[in-house]
Image (cartoon, rainbow, N blue to C red):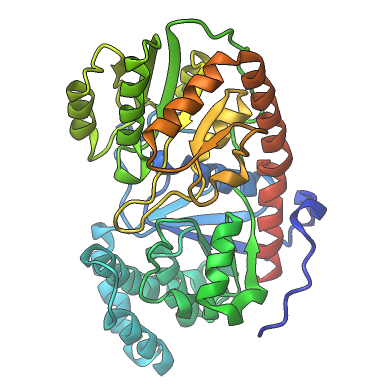
Amino acid sequence: MTEKMKIPPPVAISPRPATTSPHVKVAYILLWFPEPSQTFILDEVNTLVNLGLAVQVYTLYGPRPPARLAGMAHAAAPITHLGLASLNHLAGSLLASKGGVRSDTYHLLRQVLFRRWRSLETTGEAWWAACAGVYLGGAFLREGITHIHAPWANGPATAAWVASRVAGLPFSFCAHAHDLYPPDGALQEKLAAAAFVRTISQRNLDFLIQVAPHTVGKLVKISYGAPLCSTSVSPRQPHPPYHLLALGRFVPKKGFSVLLEACRLLADEDLDFRLTLAGDGPQRHQLQQLAANLKLKDRVAFPGFVPHRQVPELFRWADLFVMPCIIDRSGDRDGLPNVILEAMALGVPVVATDVNGIPEAVRNGDTGWLVNQNDPPALARAVREALANPLEARRRALAGRELVEAEFNSQKNYACLKYYLEKFS
């Protein structure tokens, strides 16, 4: 087993921008950036830049339309987009490198291209990432990059792995949830090749140790930061009609259909409430139809996608935030939805399910209400209890805010990440 690295715990590391080496320059590889559903990555990059780290972002796909990015904070790091517009450059780098890249790099490319991936989509992503990695490896050498980091364990980490081999630079990656469950076809190899691997929850850390126990010495847990923790909302005195809020992408793992089933139970018990189900995604029509079938159309509002800067206003009118995540049929799940941390940071009471890293933030009886996943009656009972006990809800909300400030603080946690990125540059 690899000897565990002697690295101070996160709480022992203070942000000291002035100590950043002027020679350290980190490349971040993502599919998209910025991305409305990944505001925590934007906060991570911006915080690292504000802490004094030189970061350059590279996206494997092209830029998002400006309208999609409305309401998001400005990215503090420069961004280079690849995508189809870079196809000629990628093809040229593959042809030009034929005589100049080590044979083990081509062996790695063959490993990536000719293996079993978990789906057709991930196969295409991995192939594109591998080709992009060859191009990026050369670009990183020209631009003085000293470390390569991928905030996701799937395609971005594959590109970082290949680029690392091409350029001879160290790389690292972060593992969240949908990029781990089920693991992709090269996770073990990427774990072995990386300089260090970050994950965001203890459950994920335990999972990675099971997948590759020989890499335990390079695994580190660094939780998210909550970018909204500097603000708060005025405490509300709940009264009918109670305002429930749920927010996220409309995909199965969010469990919004379970929430609607729970709302039907609450309506049957004559609870006077209104639910705002904000967001968008492939399940939008299905969820709207389910609300109609359950005779909840007068109780459930679907405002659609809400720009991130407007999210605090939604929380301002919420008596309770509900996050009913599940593990879907494919095994996909959330790691720890950042919107939970934002709700807690703003002092809003939270009801959530016990999926993956959520119990590390929502601690039943302490910082919120936690129930089993896929259990509408249990979810309904927790909502009723929270609304019926406003003083207890307020106590747990304040405890949640204190927890976020202590353990999910952007400055502290990303200072820890900065330490690792500098150490392995």
